[in-house]
Image (cartoon, rainbow, N blue to C red; front, top):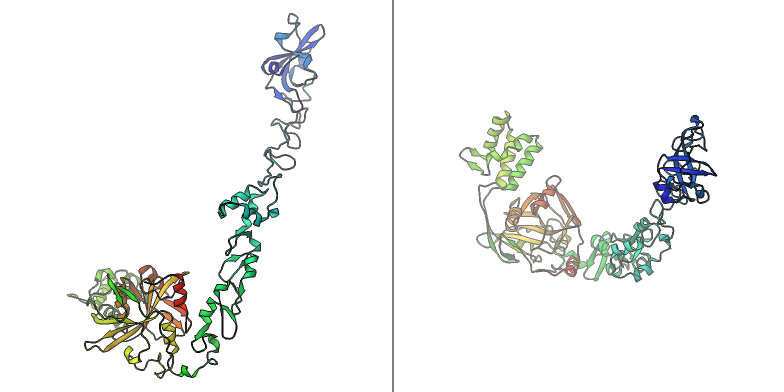
Length: 552
């Protein structure tokens, strides 16, 4: 009886035929174990009686017929001549034992797969069985047949039992537990309680966060914007509405006599006789300071001398000249301004004359008198001598003549009545920049609104020392034009730009407004130069900022 080891190593196989010489089969390839037992043997037959029958064949040695086979070393008739005789004709199979359809007698092709595409172990070429699972029980999408669907998880129980409360680690933990790990990608965390929930069960709120149903039920709906907020963001109004902080600041004002908020759209109906005169509300933070050119910060109501050199055009002035020339279509000339230097006057003439010669020499262009006049005005505005005594203050309940303009509309009884402007200015962080002549009299003033960058937008703030920018507007006297912006930029170590449009409703703002800021912020206003703010007349900005942090 032949063994697998014998069949694996033998070069020829003998088939016993009683006392007759054995048939001899010569190996024609590898021995292949078969799934139902035995081995598939590829052979070369040798039939001396009929040479036409010689050729390639195969045979299946099984445990049943193995006794009929032996090797040359074990042949009992080794001294007798042996004959090769094929039991399968060459017309039924090729040399390797495969029929015309590419399958052997056992239904397997040369790669070991049957007509259904499965090997002897029941797996296809990709390693999956007829049910679509691999040996580990995973399907082609990584879903395991022995694990539950993600939808069957009780997320609250899973989260409660999970230690560490790390969101990413928790999600990885769930992926190991479920049949389809990708389904866990639909789990998010409540923006309020931070517990897990299916994304479809979360709802967007007025805080721009998604919260679970339980938190949603505990929050309140603002009766103005119809958004959902927690209790700490809600306010009662005089008309018994329940509104959020955002709507309160944008659409409501505080009445000090009624001690409550009323809608701005009904301001005419909400009227007290005392409003015929100026409101006596005060800045909630009268004590403050601003940066002072590297020296100790300048505190409120302290007078200091500021000197800006004459004759040197500031970087901001040169940028304004460049922008103006580009507006006139002179891009090449605008790129050559560095050749003229920064001085207003040199031996070659003033800046305008030097620019005219540069244009003609380089581009054979003659600049019109209007263009030269405009460039000259810009250069002078940004290079004139400034030497002035200034102070900053939030004591804005003094008479308008203390702020240079006796007929200011920001005071009742002025040229017009916009006294609500001063209330909004005081309660949203604004302060006055005043200048004084040699006799101590007020010679000019400008309003300054500190700004901070929040959510990508500039907004009012009381943080003067740590402000991100200043808006400068409504300048009068010797603090009109660019001068107050140049002074503040010098003190803060920043740059400045002129706004093309600036508003801060409900304040009345004249033309000629400026932004003082670090270059990364200022450069955002090079093209449009627009800033639109909307504040409450009696804002609670200071109280809200004080809750966030303390002031220096």
